[in-house]
Image (cartoon, rainbow, N blue to C red; front, side, top):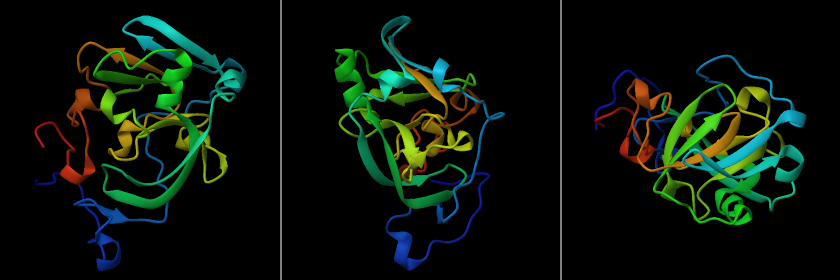
Length: 201
């Protein structure tokens, strides 16, 4: 699939097997955001799961941190073409969040919402069965605000714009609703191994 509007280095033989097409490896962790970095106070932080417009469960920061914690080490891939290997995260899997809420995933489609008004759609099947979490720590430290702290969605097998920073909720929807970048032409799923960067890729 052709790549439009992106550039980068050619992957080396040693890392090429782990690099999706069109990506290059970096040791940095670039900061890319759609807008200014919000400062989210922990005493006012809430995370809410909704079925449509109906809230089904909500947690304060203190209550959320009482949920079972899971560690994941994964490669991550940004649509701007950088990839970073072996990133270590800790947080609460979506499976454990749904179990604590006492619900099964009620629909095939999900919107993640953030404190800055950002949203992104993720197929529900990409969130469950251990594939995704609400991450609160990166490399053993609380996630910095620039990287989405205090909590961000982590869906490491999709392009990183799907891993919404400053997340404050998941909303299950009856149809696949486009989020911030998807409304501006980005792909509705964003699989890096299929170079699903833009609508039509």
